[in-house]
Image (cartoon, rainbow, N blue to C red):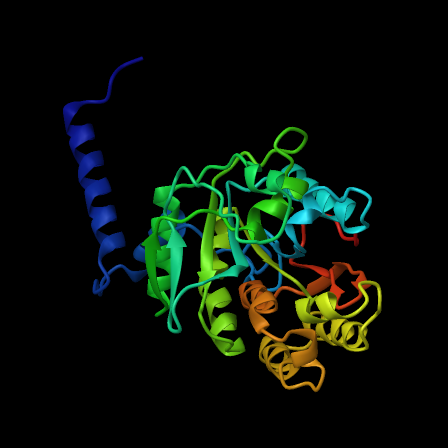
Amino acid sequence: MPFPSLRSLTLLVTFLVLAFSIYLSQNTQFLPSSRNFLRSVFSTPPLSTEQKTPMVLSNMTSTERRTPVYFLSHGGPNIMYEKAHPVYPQLQKIGREITQKVKPKAVLVFSAHWQGEPNAVEVNTFENTELIYDFYGFPDHYYKETYPNKGSFPLAQRVIEVLTKHNIEATGTRRGLDHGVWAPFKVAFDPITNPLDCPLIQVSLFASESPSQHLALGRAISSLRSENIVLLMSGMAVHNLRDMQFEAARTLMPYAPTFDEALRAAVEFDGDVEERDEKMVELLSRKDARAAHPNFDHLLPVYVGVGAAAGDMGVRLWTLVEGSFSWAMFRWGEVGEEGRL
């Protein structure tokens, strides 16, 4: 087969260059039909309506994966030993859900037992985190308990960066884990049967009782859910130590079931986010609020959870009203399959 002559190749290249120039030119006034033809050949057609990427809303899963947000009622340090108490297997179920289904790369925890400053929070940057035995009057062996865990300085710095970006003052500090973290974690994430094999970072609350402030704190760290980080809150749904000490231990206090139910209704409210926030704020003005929580420190982690939920629905996983306490557990967002524990 004969090869084309040099003259033929030159003419072919010239034609191609001219054609390509016509295609690129936006102001060419001649050969419009040729230009349109070439564009139709070389251009990629736009996506059809069915091909276009859908808009993802904050309360839709779609292609975006966000970890759930959890609230645990943690009780006292004695929860570690009370295996017959109904809350014990519930903590274990939530722990297994997190390790076996969610499988986070890290856990960010807020406890009722750590307040920072009135207008600033603190982030634990300690990688070899020790334990704080912040309780009194328990047997000696309580103060010898251990809980293996590992922090992450880079992740703690990432949390500070995210908070600062949302105009929340945050500083790093080296601190141990308080019992609001390690006591329930010994049940939920047993080091032998269900270890939490990922970094654990603790962040303080504000040293204030402002619900709006703690809702904003939750909103600020909500984006971390898209980085496969579980946000876990630890407190109590109803928490009145005074009545536990001075009243019969098993006497059901009248405020406990009423506030427990009001909290559930506010968390599970299915209107828009602003209305849900308003209902959460209104909770603290109820007549039974101060009886249920003489101090709001054990309730405020719920507000961080609601803020972090963004548009995700809240659900009460389980509750038990007992004396002057409520052990309610909440989750915002889906795990992959619906259902209560």
